[in-house]
Image (cartoon, rainbow, N blue to C red):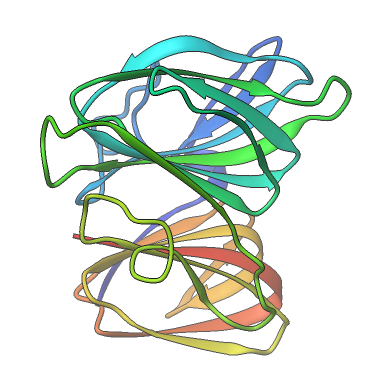
Length: 225
């Protein structure tokens, strides 16, 4: 098992008048030649958007874009005719395919929205764009598949699992591919490493993975080719 750790304060960080964002990989005007992608995982941005603010219409293509709402609500509109609001613990998938435009705005006029946006390279290019949104009731001390078989479908052989765990719990996961672990909050031991809020671990040659939860934690596991 080969592990590469990225501490939260090693991520790219930008703060604008309406957006605070942290980049796990090179994105926009943040560039780190050592942080381009992890296999098919291209982007992991953690965004906090001010009330009523957001991203106006912009374009994407040939990317699977997954948005996970951690707190608050996000209003979505796109060129496919979709228009709705994504709430806490909702997961949205947009397959950009041969081209789509969309906008994302904080739906609230008083509360911030906190989210993860994740881009995965599609295994099929120039497909017809599509959209899916689901709410997940996350059981305590259990990994729930939010993307992949049993969750939101994406055009890639990837699986995302999320779980809320009490301290002193051991979490076991049998990996299919390589694994990217992101600690949304808490304290998690991975091998000899301690991960806390915003830390991540890239793990190659995984096999059976064991996580030791040292503090109540919210974790996201991404199993990606």
